[in-house]
Image (tube, rainbow, N blue to C red; front, side, top):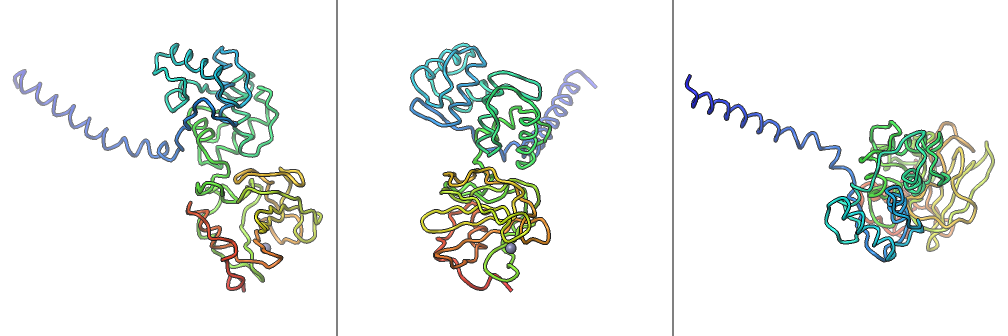
Length: 319
Ligand SMILES: [Zn+2]
């Protein structure tokens, strides 16, 4: 074989491998494709994502206050950071800047980036003290979050976990703005959300010891029927005259009368009250009349706007 033919054979082999790699790539990045997009934040944005970015800027040496308000000082720090990193300088925090800002944090770290991660975990209801100390509580919250999101649950907050935290909607529901599934989407298959109840309009979801989230934003009240009767330890959220009831928690994550946002953790599911096994009982009531929650929950699972509670049937979802 002469040199030219050997060269063309080599080119064929290289082209074949390139083709194989191209074919393999979509499969390899399949899990990354399920991550939410990084949020875009500009001057004037406020909230916990801004607070986390500010803590990350502090980690990188920019002495700004982490107050959750994207003001001129934060924008100035972002421009300096972008200049230092050699990326586009626009004073805004989008995907490229986020991916440069985040740092991997894990157990025994103690720094400003950990505070940023703790702020994020608290968005999902883990109630951590934002002290920068990555101790056992933060580790357990990170593992629980990763498990709920279907991520590798090693407690290390690396790029994928950061993106899931910052870009995600608390509750892991279908993603309809203003609503959340009451459980992480990974907790149960869709088929569990259309089951009839045993004797009146409601639903029993077979889970144990997982976070339960607010389906809507409203005012949350604790239900305390004690460990062995009625609803046990539960929560009811009132919004626009509709009551969203949760029963049989092992514990609460909200105080009585607390304003909650959709996706915020209300408590941990369990087996308290009149219950023959661990499950989450959910009921939707209007003026004391129980409505079938199945179609509401299925819409949340599917990520579409749920039907108005007043349109939910009062019969046909029990036996
Ligand atoms: Zn029930």
